[in-house]
Image (cartoon, rainbow, N blue to C red; front, side, top):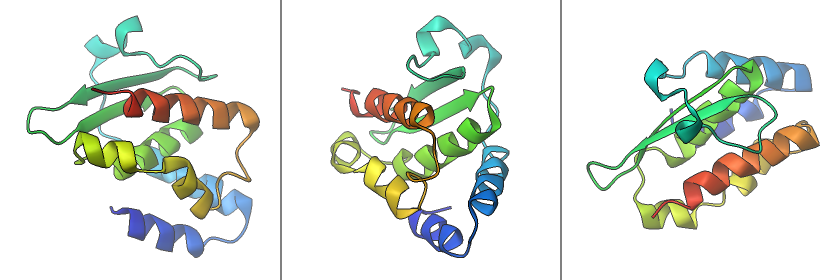
Amino acid sequence: MTTEELKENFAMLGEDDEKFSYIIELGKQLPPYPNDKRDDAHKIYGCSSNVWFDVDNASGKYSFLFDSDALIVRGLLYIIGVIFNGKSLPEIKSIDATKFFDELGLKSILSNQRQVGLLSIIKKIKDLN
């Protein structure tokens, strides 16, 4: 899936409940996360739910794996993956992911706590060297 496809899909959704249902469906598409990486070294702090994160940069393009114990968060992680996977570090640094979430119409429906967690995840990605 691409960011453009995400925008098109979210544009077709009306009610907030439809958006949340779609986010949950996206979360079910997350690739499996390795159990041996469910540790403190891979945990993202600042989220109200448990979130784990792993990164690979073998080819100069970053690849991210995520998981969470919360269905909505898993869907948000899927979206983050669409935004950042396959990008170089300069591309990652130039992406305004919070603007993208706003363009999807999600900023207004996410609780403050979820928004803070989302920003923590984005910051973790942007802080890569």
